[in-house]
Length: 216
View 1 (tube, rainbow, N blue to C red):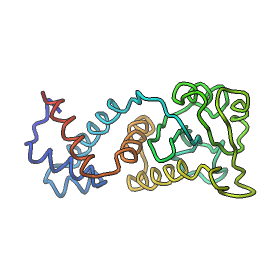
View 2 (view 1 turned 60 degrees about the horizontal axis):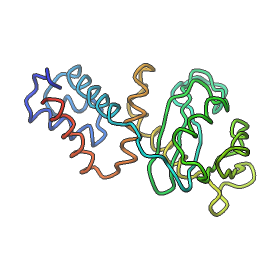
View 3 (view 1 turned 90 degrees about the horizontal axis):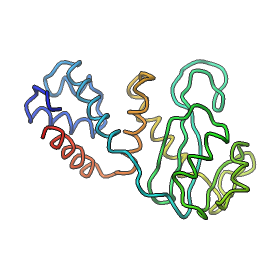
């Protein structure tokens, strides 16, 4: 942002359009800049969000855990083990914030350390019946499973919250017609940020302040 030659008016308009979920191509036309400029500016906004995305507080109470798979339009296997997709792990505090991270695989040795790092001991952790969550049965957490093949939600025993986030994130990302794999973590944290700060006015204020701080 420090080296940006754009006027503050045009930067403000780009920030507003980013918050509104506009693509860089459309934003470029509305603001009167070329698409490359708008794309780069949006990329820098995502980098700022990523840099401010660290969760310092532990999730506690009732927490939902789940993995999902993003990207790839290949036909064939869907869901777990699907080729060409990026695996992502998510934790969501009921009625609270979500935390997401790109993972190399969905094995227990990958998922359990993340849960231990981000969730307070003695919290209730809800998962589906995926075998990687078996280790939670003998952990420092209270573990409840939901079997999707039998019922989708049983009173408190569900993971509807984290699945709602996955749906929101995928719906947002679809408008970009494919996200470069190397930039996917930035787009993921953007989706997390939008979910955790759902008021557009709050998003605009926060992002504007980060840009001003960056400009010095």
